[in-house]
Amino acid sequence: MTAQARQTPPFVKDKIMLIRSAVFALAISLPSLPAFAQTAAENQVVGTWRMVSATIDPEGQNIPAYGERPNSLLIFTPDMHFAAVLTDADTQRFASNARGEGTDDENRTAMSRSIGFFGTYTVDGNGEFSRNRVEGATFPNWIGSTRTREQLTFTVEGDRMTEQFQRPEGTRIEIEWQRIK
Image (cartoon, rainbow, N blue to C red; front, side):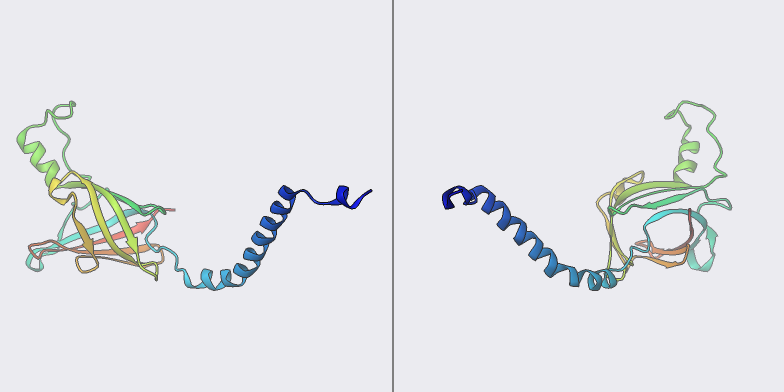
């Protein structure tokens, strides 16, 4: 076989160089992976949470915010979205089974004892909640609002989470959540 017949075609040389470059890049990056894994904190709030209790504290009264039997879920997804539906299980059913045909009193009661909203959220380097942005809500005034740790905190201890929120007029709300497994 002649030397000319044994030469490697140019496209094969390009592929070999590409493979060598990829292997080299991988070899250089591997030592840093364990350090990264140790410094990246787990998102503490991710998961589905069921409300255990909620109290509203106008002037120190500690009133149940969603009745004696709150029936509520809060969901934080790994892709940084959240959804919340907060309801009072003791809210009376409407006389009509047709949605949108409630009386003024039925609608007022249902609205005052429930809320639903969704949006995006962020966590800090420790995996702790840092802020949310409301994209949609049954209370339209919340749409587009952002809450930071100054207005809203979530403290996670195991499968329990305490939420503390202060309304713009100063009323404080505290909600206890249990992680659903």
